[in-house]
Length: 364
Image (cartoon, rainbow, N blue to C red; front, side):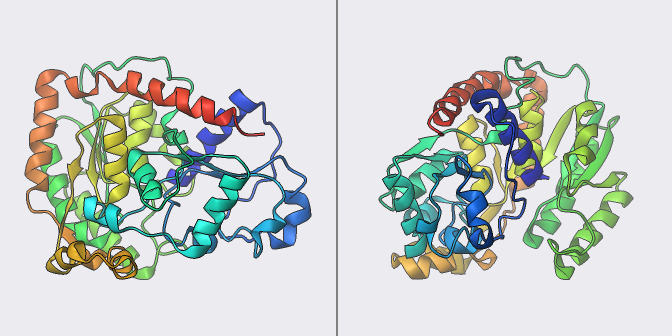
C-alpha cells in the first residue's frame, strides 16, 4: 500500500507544482533502464519517488538505473527518499556506510547541481555522516494530501472504527497479538479492522514463510473479533479508511494516511523508518524493538563494513517487552486530553510542505 500512496501523492505534487501531465512510467524499481535509454533521455528527468530506498546498496541493488550512469543524460532526482536502518537507533546511524557505487550515484547528483530530497532527519544524518551534504529535508510525498493540507486537526467526537495494521517482521508477531488484545478494552464499542498492507497469501512480494505467520496472525485477529482485510496492491483497497476514526499499528504508511487526513494514529516502530517518521512529525511513537546480545555487540563495533552488514539483520533485535504497556498508556493519555499531542501536526506538515515545494522548483 505504501508504494501506491507515495506514487499517487508524488504525481499530485508534480502536477500541481511542475505542471507535469505526461510521464514515462516505470512501475518496477527493479527494472534497468538500459534497454530504454533513448526514451529516458528524451524526458526532463528521472524521478525516484519516496520509499525506504536510501540504503547502503541503493545503486545498483535497490535502483538498477543504468549499467553506466553516464548514459543517463537527464538529471536524476531523488524525491523524499528514506533511510532504512535496522534496528534504527543512534548506533545504527553512526555506523552506517554506503557502498562505492551508491556514493558514485550521489556524486553524479551533486555534479548535476541538485540536492537529494529526503523524508526525515535520520536520512539526512545518514547521508551527511557519509560526507554527502547536498541534502534537503522535504518530508515524504505521502504526507501531503492536497485536499486536506489546510485542514486543522479535530479530535474525533467518538471512535466508531479502529484500524490495526500488523507488522512486516515475524519477530513482532507475539507483540502484535498483545496489541490486538488491548484495543478491544480501550475501544469496547468500536468496529475493529485488521488491515494487511502487504497481503496475507504468498506471492512474488510475500515469501511462503511470511505468508504462514501472517496467516496465523489473521486467524488470531478473527478470533479476537477483528474484521480481517487484505489491503495490498492498490489504494482503492484502503478507501474505507475514509470512514475510520483511528489507526494503531506498525505500518508507516497506514499511519501517514490517517495523519494526512488529520485523523489520530499511533505508530509502533519496527525500525528506523518508523522512528524517522515520528521524529520528523513531532509525535511520540512507541519503540517496538530492543537489541539482542548480538545487537549490543554490533552497536559497539566501529568497523563500518562489519557493523553495516550486521546492523541490517533482524537477528540484532527482538520485540520489546514494555511496548504494549507503553502504547496503552499513550493511547489512554491522548483519549483523556482530547488528542492534545496531535494539535501541532497540521502546522508541522505545512512547514515541511514549503520545503517540498522549494525542492520541486529545482526540478527542470
